[in-house]
Length: 78
Image (cartoon, rainbow, N blue to C red; front, side, top):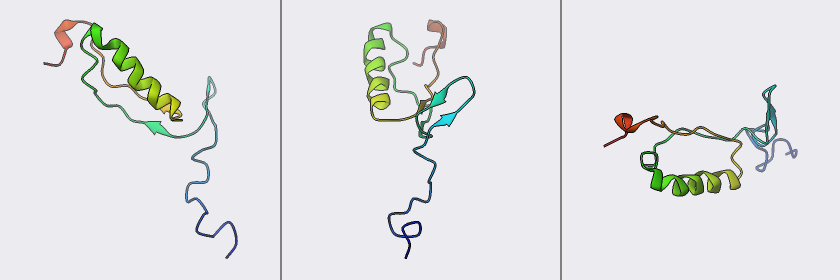
């Protein structure tokens, strides 16, 4: 068995390589999908929301897609 076909060979060889988008470069191709955390609707929770995303960014994800964000109280989740 060669190193390329051995048990440690990755089925996704490009996953942790940079991705050039033209206007910016991602450090890898790992994406955190959009999700609501329940912290988007109250200004007092913004520091918690920032900490939530900072932890995921520090973990190495290349791109974070945030959940919905209402521009005013009419769109807040209830």
